[in-house]
Amino acid sequence: MKSNLLKLAIIAIMATGASFATSTASAQVYVTVRPTYAPVVRPVAPSPRHVWIEEDWEYRGGRYVAVGGHWVAPPRPGAVWIPGRWVQSRRGWRWMPGHWRRR
Image (cartoon, rainbow, N blue to C red; front, side, top):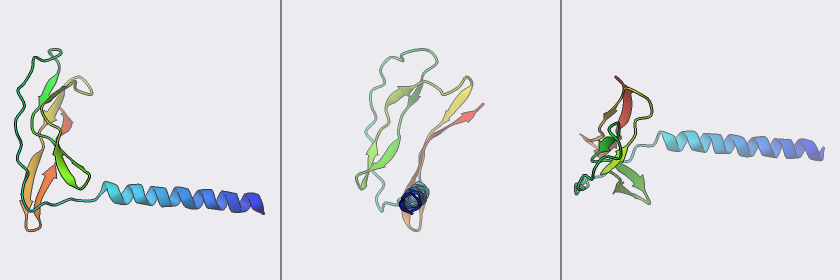
């Protein structure tokens, strides 16, 4: 009886965690004023295959934080960086993050 209750409690906790992870991953954050980005001086590339990521944003602590201005190695040969962009709608501005795409 005790082990069945323990198994049931573990399953309930896992299901709650899975539903929370799913719901937060699809959340859209809108702002009324698009943040400004101060470009970073581009240092020398670490290697010829690195790609410069200019303007990029992450939502942290209730606000957007600039995380652009850095070199990144592509995840696979031939990958192309598609820059992120701000998209305006009736609800406000929303950041569409950059991503890697196959060439």
